[in-house]
Image (cartoon, rainbow, N blue to C red; front, side, top):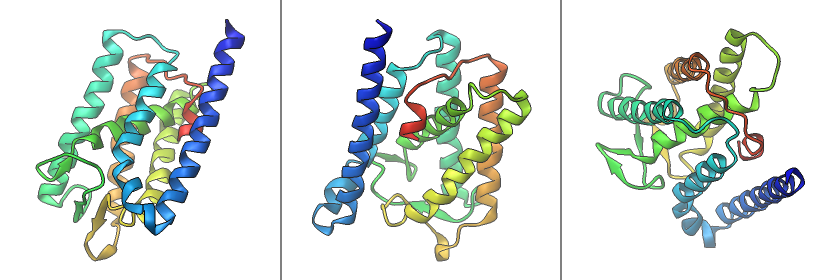
Length: 200
């Protein structure tokens, strides 16, 4: 049984390596750029579905409520951020992330959950104090965002006023990440997942 599960995990990991290699090629080539831009929200959904299938922790109401909180609170913060331009800085969303409400794509909440879960998961088995683990996971999310911020305008996700990403954005990212990771640790949710590192 374990051998079969391992083979499935291995197959899924290989699939994602091929999937994103093809995706990168499709975004680089001008003839397929528009097609692959349209697939961005669907690829995020695929990430979340596959991660949920290989989630090794419990699937109880507590876990569901924490994950739901991360999604909904993130959407609310993003809506407020876009509306006021005072939380993350002056930015607006473009069209590649799908359906928007109050100028904010709904899938952005799922993106925050994906990143919180994945960065927690890759450090789940590392032996270190909980506080250090929270800080490290949050810093990993910020590092991811630093890379993403330079790619987002090209991928028609969002763009910043004068193309300048303010320091405030990264500070808020770290603060929110720390809150989410602290909540996961405080509630004892196990985020072990063999796919997290590959997908992240």
